[in-house]
Amino acid sequence: MQTQSEYNHLVACMRDESVSATLYRRQADTGNAAAMAHLGRMYEDGRGGLTRDDAEAIQWYRRGAEAGNGQAMASLGYMYERGRGGLTKDVVEAGQWYRKGAGTGDRFAMHFMGRACEFGLGVTKDRAEAVQWYRKAAESGFTPAAERLKTLGE
Image 1 (cartoon, rainbow, N blue to C red):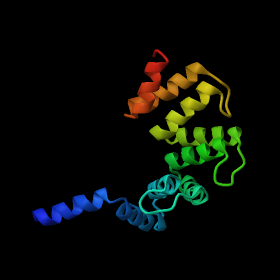
Image 2: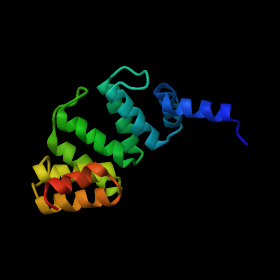
Image 3: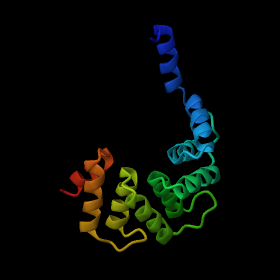
Image 4: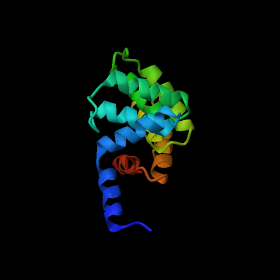
């Protein structure tokens, strides 16, 4: 049984992104691919007391991608698409990472694969395929994909 004070402390820790960054790093260091992706996002956004650092974000995304995390794959693809963190802008490489990530069933990656198909980012422009990927992402609860489907009239 938890006291109210212990519960309040837990809630405060959950809201403190620096605590989250520490926990993600600890988990990432033990091989947790999802934690690697989250830590990469924190570096990309400069959150949790971490300095914004695209190169460090890429390192964590790559580690997460190599460990099989679809979100890390899509995030790495986005960095290639934009040419960030010292990477050469390469939409073909981005499209490959989006497809790999979507293949894991990750909703974030499926949304990015839909976007790639819609706009021809490293893959053949194909509205029907884009809608399929957006629909899969939306069905898994990814709100931006559902919003994109509405915009496309689907």
